[in-house]
Length: 134
Image (cartoon, rainbow, N blue to C red; front, side, top):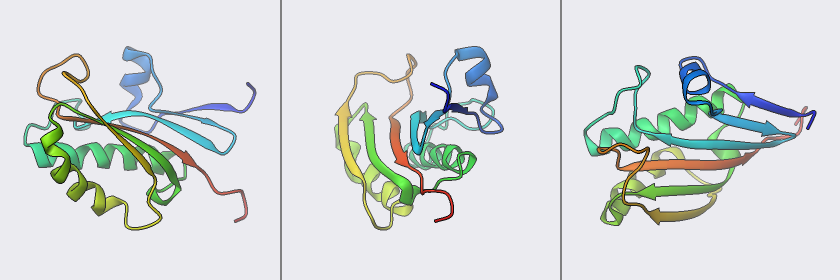
């Protein structure tokens, strides 16, 4: 694929270099965003649940920014939850970032995320970027 481009925002180089995945991959106008979790720029877990959810969306925003995209460009979201009772809190935080033109959404319960305890949420997304000049 000649138009495949890895999106690696500043501060996320370690995931590409050490863990061997791209935070996002752009193919044409489609942006596939890898699951984002609530870890800070120092790759440390944010422990407070709401703060971890916010950090997850801030990490998603970082990837979107690096690709020249925004939350308005996201067409599909998949969220993974270690406790489905957290959905109201998730929706409260999510709605700070998605203020209209809502994407499709699937929520999935998971026993554990990232192979490590303490993570409550992971969010992956697909965005369609605007055509150049629009």
